Length: 89
Image (cartoon, rainbow, N blue to C red; front, top):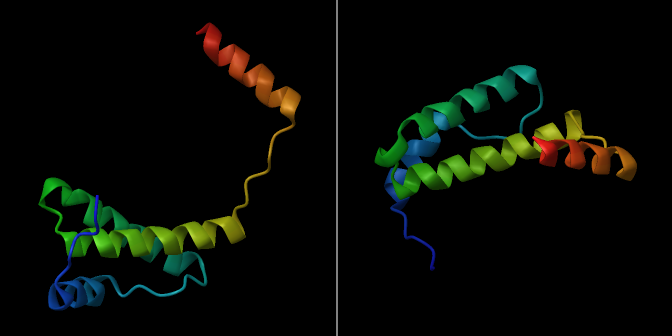
């Protein structure tokens, strides 16, 4: 599946509303999360321009969260036990 063409002017309007930038603190993190939520709430009405902005915002949040909230990798034995418990349900 090929890339969907986006209208530069429409995309610029969406970016103007979301003002994406590198997240440097919790306040900015919350602001970007709110922007993501607003775009997600559009559901089926999202335009390709909305989707492009959403993708950008998600990447910014992921980068911030990986730096500030890194997930520890569980020990292999703990992971195996967890997966075995989940299968029994």
